[in-house]
Length: 281
Image (cartoon, rainbow, N blue to C red):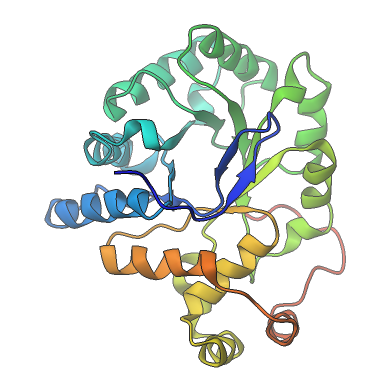
């Protein structure tokens, strides 16, 4: 089955990927929900949410195993992302961690492999591991997660560091700090930004201003929050463990936010007034 289109965003190489994808944090941890979570992931792919993001950290590999099962027969339609833990991110450890992820995911390659956050290993070590994996055809692109401006600037000075494709960070209406410096830096450097927890794990959905905008537009608060992230030219990867929520999330890609709605959201969730440390969950 060919996937629908949910809008695209370009990687630095020019390759287009879905602007609205699917996250898997906390998936695969409850056997009673497994069938529903697999159905949700498969439906998301069919609806065009073809970026599927996971990590070796999630459930100690359980999320990757779930994704591997869910994507059986769909692998060629998906842009598959996983991440290496900082403690594994020396040169040899990065390669070994990726190979373990590939086994759990039942695939021969990742489309994007990220350093989950910065740890004790120098970035040169992780980059060398990424280079080895690229040469072996086990990953197609590499990137980072939870790296702030200073880290990104350092990475760019390393040999081959300017090939970084993505910085995946916490970004949503209530976490707008990256708009001050990191988001402009990434735009200038042509690094694609990917937003995890784009609805703040549901915590912002009870904010009255968001609900008011949603009612005016005939949408859900989650759809408005996701549409706002997509409007920033950022890939959004909301997690959903049920087909119904996946269908609701998909509606965000078609939702237009008029000026009045944007003004209301800006008043309720102000943009940053200065530089702040990068937030993480």
